[in-house]
Length: 211
Length: 385
Image (cartoon, rainbow over all chains, first blue to last red; front, top):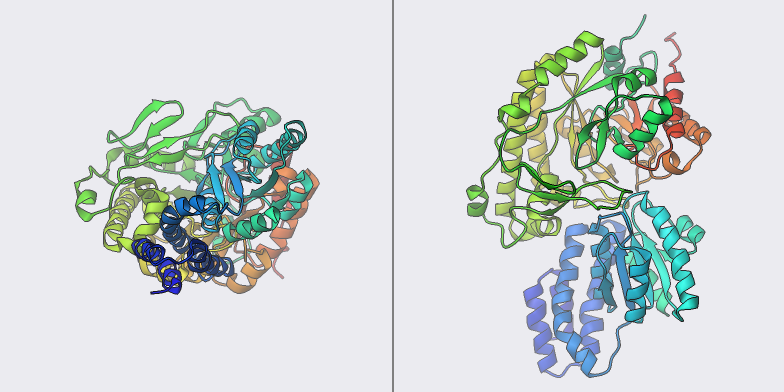
């Protein structure tokens, strides 16, 4: 029995096995952070890398992220007990006027699998909802998603309002954007802190932004 | 010679040059215009005809005949009528149930009026063959689906020599997502493939039955193009493995659909696939697809030059005028430049039908729409030497 078996079980999309192995490692006294980082996060990073290079696809990434979530259910309370904080907190949602959430859900799952605390506001979320949730949860990042080109002006408006909130409400939250019509150029133009080209790209970006 | 609309489109789909590039607008649910953009276009063009809805889900309009005439559009749309009876029901203006028992909702805010599925008959629990069989399935031979189709064909034929595009909605993937839920469907590809393929077969049967009965009503020899499809790509890649998943599960069913149509008359198939279709194109050509729509040029590996060079001798392209940047955010002159560029690349030697990438979206200014069709219409092929 070893943490590498957890890595294998994630790579096999086997949530039952992940649950069983994580429980066994915990019982054996393995450090929770080792289980998390070397067993689960490392495996999901590798899945994400293969997704971005185009050798694994949406179903596989979805199932791997779910396998990691099964393990997180077990280790999350233990992390809290031992005072280990999440890598960061991300408030995520699809912007106002847009109900598409497939991409947003994948990004949320991959961020969660990378050790972030996720506050998922769902779809059709306006700037005030993002800001309130960010303040309440002391979030590091707001992640805005949209499928439609009509969502792009909404993102632009939201960034302005979030910037204002950062100064008037004593917050320090950064904004990342993603979705099919969105690009790095667009993110820069509207003053967002970054753009994730896909779900693993969003994880890389979020890691960079919280450090 | 003077080319009729029909001859022009048929030439393009045979990889031959007509007198100019054929133009489609409103031939199918994904080659039209959203209702919001349509209202602005009507006002801009001084058209006061009543708006007819083509698709509730995509909030798309049937462009009025006067607009099609003004833009010199070569295609005319035919599609199945509304299903008689069954599960269909409106709960309120933002919530309806379709013939497959799927619940669709839209945002009450007015920027986007798409409906998305929020619940379906197999959303919850494990998918089993028994559950699928116990469901009260709609019948592809339902008389409502074929009603009015023959009359519509006759109406088009009486009005002029337009290319007749029969749009047959659905398939085995998207309707499956709607009935089972997107994430469940993807998991079932691995976890419950037997039950999922049974669901695919039920959906394929429905589509084939509809195709047979609607083609019969139309008169198969009167139809130039059957348009259908499902999304296989994302902006940045493939939704699923082109070999392990597409070739194994979806391709045989898509082949059956194509063959159902092609066995009845000399009909070309235009297959709709959003996003990066690149890695699926060889499979689509292999099953008998003649044209790819919408040619999402901003998706990965979908550069027009690459597509024309690699597949242009075997596949036609239908769409390609960018809706993710140029049409909504460009100037009319930028739209014209893009149209000229796309025609130069994809239209070389025939094999191209001009249309926007997917429906013209809600924020596209009417000036840009006019610029797109006007520029497309200006293009002529040099007479053959």
